[in-house]
Length: 149
Image (tube, rainbow, N blue to C red; front, side, top):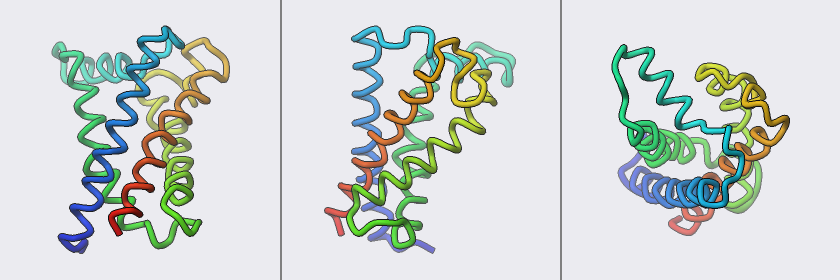
């Protein structure tokens, strides 16, 4: 069972990582990068099919933000000592690559994007951008978590 001290550190670090991730996604939108690669819209469509009702566009973003700020960051806190590397940024990179593989092999196919987003029709670009998404989150997560320790 995680201690209260570990929990607040993981949640604060996860919040910082989620903010960094959100800023990257805003930049993607603002710059018009990969316009046909819209993982939040794909998640929204999947959720609508599963629930049989319309899902507001903010729901997938909130789910991602809350997940990154709580569950994913708490798992990072639990795994921290076993992740390779001596500093938080390296541990965050390792965690991000694991998350990227999970997203590309499990989550993207579940929401209709295929393995690593290839069904978006943009070649390797969705896979590379999703790696950037996960590394942005996880490196910031690792740096902040390490600083709080």
